[in-house]
Length: 234
Ligand SMILES: Nc1ncnc2c1ncn2[C@@H]1O[C@H](COP(=O)(O)OP(=O)(O)OP(=O)(O)O)[C@@H](O)[C@H]1O
Ligand SMILES: [Mg+2]
Image 1: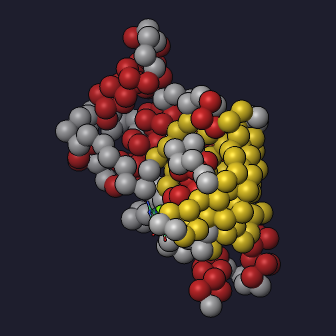
Image 2: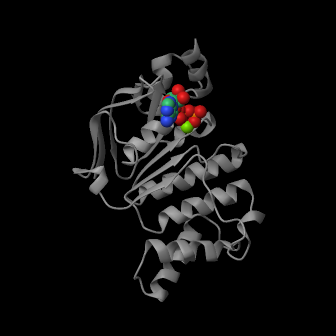
Image 3: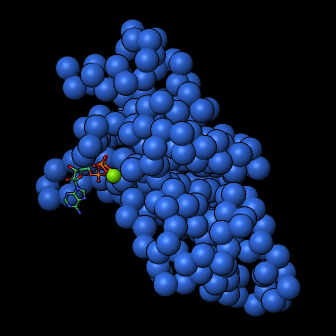
């Protein structure tokens, strides 16, 4: 299974926000998207999910237009959760909506499964507003895993987390990808980028690099990922 974007172009306010972006992402792989603020990462993510229609180009998942490709998972840059709900209840509500018609026992088992998957066991009965930022992000990820989407995209899920937690979250995304999903994560956290199987570098709406993280170091002739940013702004 692959996600295939061909020659994507997006315009807004008379100006080009994305131009000529083509990528193929494969199941089982974690792909990172990096690029300066305003480069078009969130815009590309919304196009890949079928939420924004590009002016030109097309996106397919397993050969079908993304709009007809079934459930996809999306954790937006500014995700909203109901703070007053306990973790288990928030997930169960979401499951009732998303897995409409599933018997209670199966649904509860699924909720239990995603709680374990994101490492929130032991926190099920805590109100979301009492969770740390990282734990709250885990709830958002768990919500998206409920429907077992083939494609999961997270827009800067680790911003504001300490480097240790950031690395753990990237490990989680990698594990989710290994399950046979396509997982794409935009990030500004360079210290965990080598956990990605593929890396996309966007600059002013153009895809200037798509390949292994190590290959990006060679391309820019640097030894650490932070230096890529210095090179991009030079
Ligand atoms: N609805 C819109 N109308 C006009 N311009 C927009 C719109 N949405 C985004 N843009 C512009 O498109 C460009 C890319 O925005 P986008 O949010 O995709 O960047 P980003 O790489 O996600 O940035 P950040 O790292 O800050 O989240 C920016 O210059 C932004 O101002
Ligand atoms: Mg963004």
